[in-house]
Structure formats: C-alpha cells, structure tokens
Length: 217
Image (cartoon, rainbow, N blue to C red; front, side, top):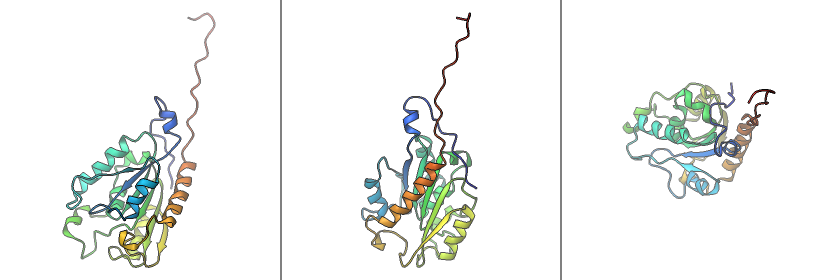
C-alpha cells in the first residue's frame, strides 16, 4: 500500500519551491559505477541529480553504506527519488522506517542477491535481504540472465517490496557491460515512476494570515 509523503519540510526559506520538485539520488552498487555505466550518464542528464559517494567501494560495510544514504536523504530539501543499482537496491530497501517518508519513489535496477551460495564474502554483511514492503512507489528492473540474481529471486524481492516489475531480455547485470549507453528505455520507466510519485505528493497549502480581532492590539 502506498503512503502519502508528509514529513519533509514544506515551508520556510525556499521550502515552497523545494517542495514542487523531486530530488534524484543515484545509489551505485559494489565497486561504484564507471563512466560508461548508465548511472554515470544519468548523473549528467538528470537535473539536480545527486550521487552517493561511499568511503570504500571495494569493501562495503552495510551500516556505513546505509548511513551514507540516510545522511543524503535527511539533508534533501524535497522528496527524493532513488535510482539504485545492484547492491544499492538493498541499501535503499534497508532505510530506517522513519526516513522512508521522505522517499517519493525508487527505481531498483538489478538487485544483487547477496544470499546466493557464490556471493562474495564481502557482500554477506548485507544479508538478510530486507523484504519489508516499501511505503513508496517503486519499480524493480531485472534481467532474465543476470549472473548475480536469478529472475525468480528478483521477482520475489519485488513482490515483497510491493514493486512493479520490468524484465529485460539478455541484459545481464544491467550495467556498463550491457551496452545500454544512456539507456533510453530506463529513462522512460524512470519518467513514468516520477509522474506517479509526483501525483501522490500533496501540494503545500498556502499559509493564511490570522484574522485580526476588533478591539485587540
């Protein structure tokens, strides 16, 4: 069930303008996303996009990675749209419950199955995979030949998260090796997600000045 966003600051200095747009936050996975990765291309294509920078991309620590994303969302002046890939999907799904009210939507691309038997040891700290329903609009994009997550597992994650599912044919891990360039199909899906998320965000009401009472200063 979707939840209306209310907890972010709507009023105050620049608050009204900030509330009228969504803040894209790009959440890369293990080892970051290189210059040919669609996430890196989107970082320059999407206005106002912010990219998460982790301290150590090679040796991820789950609490630290989650805290980095939490800090970025917490300081956002407007509701955020998460654009996550691989391990970044698990980080996005593990957000503390109170902070989820600041998330308008999430594009979760090729979630990594860190519970699989051959998962690298450094990723096992992200298990168990969060499976609680997400209280915001979300789309899982999976590939039918992803070497790091079987399609049935990606579908199961999406079902538990309450996400829509889009399946790509032969796209591997949906990364730079997939040859997607700017990935127009992904941008189209993201645009649809953004519209659905925007529709669910209430327009801030104008502040009405108090009515003066006759005879009182």
